[in-house]
Image (cartoon, rainbow, N blue to C red; front, top):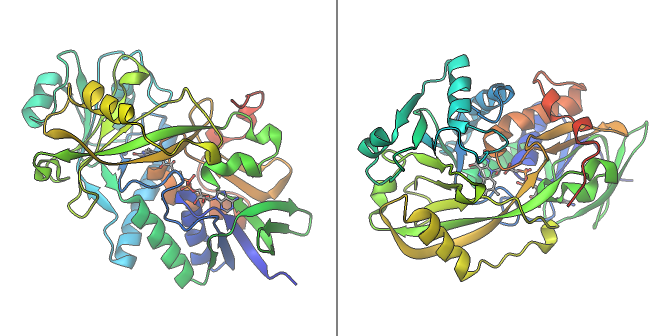
Length: 394
Ligand SMILES: Cc1cc2nc3c(=O)[nH]c(=O)nc-3n(C[C@H](O)[C@H](O)[C@H](O)COP(=O)(O)OP(=O)(O)OC[C@H]3O[C@@H](n4cnc5c(N)ncnc54)[C@H](O)[C@@H]3O)c2cc1C
């Protein structure tokens, strides 16, 4: 007889680890299953740091999620004694009316400032001269200006995931790693989950499989989810102390076209060697198992000579490490969080589109509420599945 659980969580990355922690903290009998061994480097949640900010220019309906996440990160820090967040401040640099949209928004400096104003979030909008005066390593163009949020910073994704898994286990959750879920069936009586190793029964199921979500959804649900390969680079610094979060903010650089977009991260002293840089691309999509994991010399050179050198001082042309990571993107670049169209026993969560980590702690709470209470206190109406109807998968 398969063991019976209140809830099973499939996928224990950013969202699944948070959901498992929240469900088991509430006393639910929970099982988490992952095909790999999170935190791992094969999905969407690795790379040492993730930007977090409160004024979410992608849409102000994200503000309650990020604020609740901030509370949960602090709670997790105090429960575990681990440092999960480094305050560095953050700069979004863009020319006025940037024609390149960022995560679906046109003028992201203006959009962020608008949200900050409406929600009482400390911020400034500064010109290029002021950016250079405060941060001599940065070389904005004279037309650029920046949204600055002093309370922003970076989260440590691997530690956040590990901490939530550890605390979930302490609260009684069962965790099975290295086990791929191959299917599930929901009936009036419950849900049966099938994996490469066995069958498990539960009252409710949360699917948080990241880039592999489409494999677990029926055709009309998966339409519109595109998996786009991204690359994270770490370049050698002339003096790494100049990039310490205490003195160096994260920077989102937005240019006239999407090809000019990139971001620079502060380097926590206990983090990866070098300074982390990230680009974004949405042109090429593939199945996550077929994603090209090799990073070509031309990609490293492009990152350094085309994007970094014209805008940032203090880095050498020496790429210490590079990793592939994946965005799972919806057509409007917002999240997908909803009940499965065929059964409310199954909650589906694909909250990525390249900006999900900062919200993941509260998304986990949302998913646990949806599964255990049949409703959530958060407004997730913008993340519904119905809006993707008619989308096509590339
Ligand atoms: C390069 C890059 C930079 C980013 N920067 C930021 C940032 O600065 N700020 C920000 O907020 N967000 C950022 N994001 C987005 C954010 O990291 C993601 O939204 C988030 O980490 C996605 O979490 P997830 O749980 O959906 O996926 P994952 O963490 O990848 O978890 C999915 C899990 O499901 C498991 N799984 C899949 N299929 C199965 C199966 N069949 N059976 C069992 N297990 C399965 C996988 O092994 C994996 O562990 C970035 C993303 C990338 C790629």
